Length: 132
Image 1 (cartoon, rainbow, N blue to C red):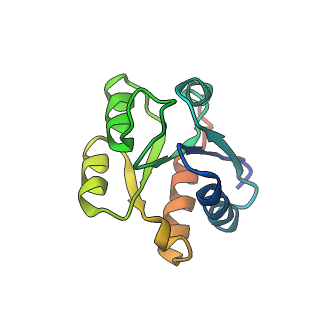
Image 2 (cartoon, rainbow, N blue to C red; image 1 turned 90 degrees about the vertical axis):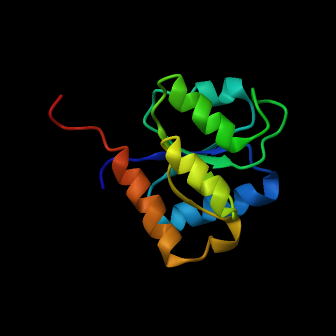
């Protein structure tokens, strides 16, 4: 893959960022991993073809404290980055996917090969088309 995808860790604490960054780096060679702890930081990545790994519970720097609501809001605003909810709760995953997110996973699954496949697939979805 000559494209170097960017993954943005949205609303994750320091300890979770370490595990997520490690999982991304194992799954997608050459991936960049950045973080967004506020709406302003997130907005820098809205049109750059990044993959958003959205925490289910967000801190006060966002327009909502709920990651599913953030995904819904971004989708409603016409923002279409690849978004993945990070949550162990099946109901939250279903809501996020209904709003347009890719299938997600929980932090307890970071070592699973299926998660590596999800991350790799999300990176492939951000590859710019060569026909433009």
